[in-house]
Length: 113
Length: 116
Image (cartoon, rainbow over all chains, first blue to last red; front, top):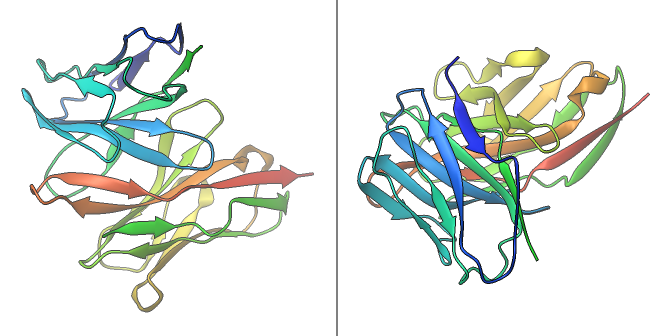
């Protein structure tokens, strides 16, 4: 089955540690996205990538980093510089070309204490 | 700048009653509009989308939405809700960035509660 995989479902870290969230897709989509979701704030775009080896900052990129070495993979690192990292993180992918339609993974809930 | 407003944070509806969730957008060009649904702790699932043509679009699970350009609205409707419709609903507009990349701007969501 084609889809987007995010692992793990739940992640716990101590404050001051970097943590990397995994996102893999087998939909053969060129574009991939990372969102952060907090209660009452909807989805906010962190980073996106339209092609391999290229990515752009979204609306709330500070304290995050990404890489796009393979078409299938778009890992997100939450660094110790992110002041409030506890949130639900969603990965998505799409086929660029005017449809704008995005397909979402199941999400990772990160808790930092 | 583009934006999406969902004025209702939380709506409670009786099972079997009709439903309308409001969405207003602000975008200078022809909008590409979406409704997504999210069950607790899950990802988002596409309910329906509007690109062009007929302003009344049908989606999955018996949902429909009507695009009204004059009101900058894209409200979601269902004639009779089921308990399984309890979830959070997000409206989104597709936009082009300054670099020509495509992205979605989301509203803050409406949480739907169904009472027996």
